[in-house]
Amino acid sequence: MSTTDFYKQFIVDLDLVEQASHNPYYHEVQAELSDEIIIEGKPFVDLASNNYLGIANRPELKQACKDAIDQYGASLCATPVCSGYSELHHQVEQKIAEFTGTEQALIYPSCYQANLGLFAAISKPEDVALVDRCAHSSLLEGLKNSGCKISPFKHNDMNHLETLLQNCVGTLHATSLPKYRTIFVVTESVFSTEGTIASFAEINELCLKYNAIPIVDDSHGIGVLGAHGRGILEHSGISGYQGIYTASLGKALANIGGVICSKPSLMQWMQYYSSNLVYSTAILPSALAGVEKVLDIISDEFPELSKRMWNAKKRIEAALIVANFDLTNGAAPITSIKAGNSLQTLELSKVFWDKRIMTTAFVYPSVPQNEGRIRLIAGANMREETLQRTEEAIKSIKPH
Ligand SMILES: Cc1ncc(COP(=O)(O)O)c(C=O)c1O
Image 1 (tube, rainbow, N blue to C red):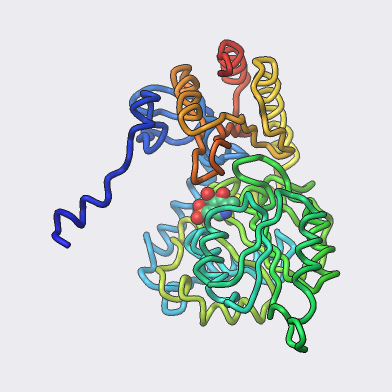
Image 2 (spheres, rainbow, N blue to C red):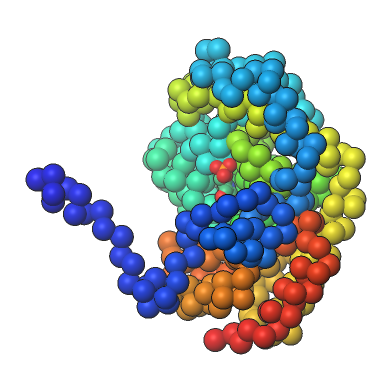
């Protein structure tokens, strides 16, 4: 193939964007996150970021990041297995394990990388993974790369999950060999596009009953769910969790990075055999210090932050209902509009954009065909005047 032909393969089809006269992706942000976000010189209401607790621009958080730069420099310029593993890294891992109610934590540069690394390390073609059909791309990609059999269950449908579990246990026909070496059950805690919350207490019980390993991605639950913001395990009343837990540190925790938490034996094994950890430069010290500060802020202020976050979610949701939008009705502080096919989704995102409201548009393949979503996340930092302005703007929008 000629060089010209090689590069010709990579042409993005922008037909839909042209038809909608709007591209909702890759806008350049020009300032820090408050309840407004500056894009192309103009203020937009920020209903797009995952800044659930609204603390990404807190002065004490920024100061903690700067102090870590003063102490450790911008980067340790090494993978964690070599000289990239600081005492701060170790300290934050311990703090996260304690916070989430798990035994031990390992910090990766991102949760996408953590999820890929997890399945690369633990699953094999002789395993099966029962996965919620709405699970995040990082979980699905990790599973696909590992070659294990993937069997999706209907979104949050415990009866369907149990039927699949019943089919997976037992032995191969006319042999004493088990059908699968390991059965994994994989779910998000809060589904990022739907705003629904997994019935994780039930999933955990089913796993105990059928000897399966539960794996939950709590990226949108950590810092959000539970009486103290400790995430899905606290929310589900689970103690002594025997499964695997992953989460992003870049959403409510307002930094960057990902964690895997589980039993010390698996964590130690991953420290040496997880390529995504061993061969990738360690997360920056400034992000570690940032996470540590956010955990302190959550300990001190969660009741108030949570009250404000829920108030903002309820106000935005109520305005959308009055305006006759069809919502997914998730129980998490994510409000998602069922927007139809990809073109309709881009068109609706433009309507919000024109009202200077920044939302997130999900189109296929991020969501199934014709199940486009416009997602709105209102953080705890929404000021009353911004909320009122947003409510008024939403009421003036007509659903298509
Ligand atoms: C459910 C879920 N898992 C994993 C990720 C990836 O997290 P990170 O941004 O830390 O790579 C995301 C972020 O988009 C997510 O929503």
